[in-house]
Image (cartoon, rainbow, N blue to C red; front, side, top):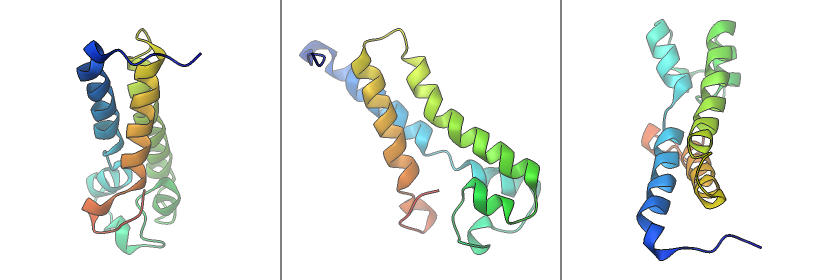
Length: 112
């Protein structure tokens, strides 16, 4: 039986969705390549900011760190809500996935 939506917990549900969305908005590939002083990752290869494109720069350690960062930004909101009901986790995950996929603020309409 699916969990019942409790109207008194609506602010918490919205908070879980927003927290997942904010965690998904962290562009690890872009941040790590800028910190390493490499060229703009969006101008290399496919133009995405994900680990595969970071690997194309020749920095294996940066690509691994990007992959780990992207994995953790999806895991963290869900694990943080572990003690809560299943609905919290079901809201935090899609919020992160949606923000990770659509990166219009980086000048592109596609994900990392």
